[in-house]
Length: 449
Image (cartoon, rainbow, N blue to C red; front, side, top):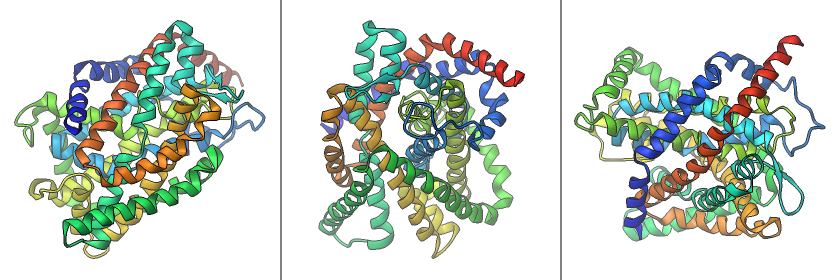
């Protein structure tokens, strides 16, 4: 079963999905008039809440929506995923993560604008947003099969198995250090059950509680991680220009790991960027679709800051630590253990504990928000009255993820992300003229006012 999951993931992450994500992102970048570069200043102003309307339809504020989306994306994908990218694709993979992030900002602008434009109602009459509602309301009932494909893939792919797996691995490496395989397996079950109980306290309170917790956790977690990484980067400051040069050169040669296979480096970078910032996958539109706003373009502009914070800032910080300390060349470790080794070398004694705090907050915030995404997919497939049971299934899989193989859980999530990307990107490309027209109208009104 595990081998089948790995083979499927490697097969689906071939040229078609890369053309769809990178090609689609490139189209959105130009079609929008370079929105991810020229309108980033306006997007930052919107974050201050100047234009918030508490009377608009929706369940949470735009800032809470962005916080929840970032809580889901700024997680172990940034700590463990970057390490996996460098392990598999060399330093050059980071360059392609940057490229994918800027294109992803434009993609998120379109997908999250559409999430407000084409909101639907669930079986209980509650307003909902997300790719499945965009497809049904914007493209029509004949395309509903795409919405069902998205929701089924989301039901499976948005489980917290990868995050709980890596949180368990790091906790053992730092705090417990088991002496036997039996001890390690027992500890995995214990850590998984504790994580499940902590998660239950938050997610059983619904979206508003998740959003409130996320909006408090996100600034703290990014701040503490930035502080820790800055100490290490400052320690090796003289080597930073050399590392930046290595990233760019390796991006076009692939010499470091792949033996000159540039295509493999690009695939690794794009794959890890998609896992890291989720642009084009369709998760963020589900939470941004719940925002209290009548302005689709405004929501799209706020949403596009997600990939910038996630990949350009946080992933780059992680990559610099791994490259500057040199552990990527000498270590047999992968995933979060490689990042841990870099932190231990960069800040002896205290580094691993600072990383532990960051990882704990990153992981829990991701696990909280993913539960909402999966709940929403269940709601769409089976109705609002059945969706409440999803959370209990989700909680059980946290424990299962803790004891599963890393390669299998990464492949499961990657594979389902790719399946989700097809309906999301097809609907966004199909409806892109609607976003462009709304964008022109919005900025014309802003200019006049």
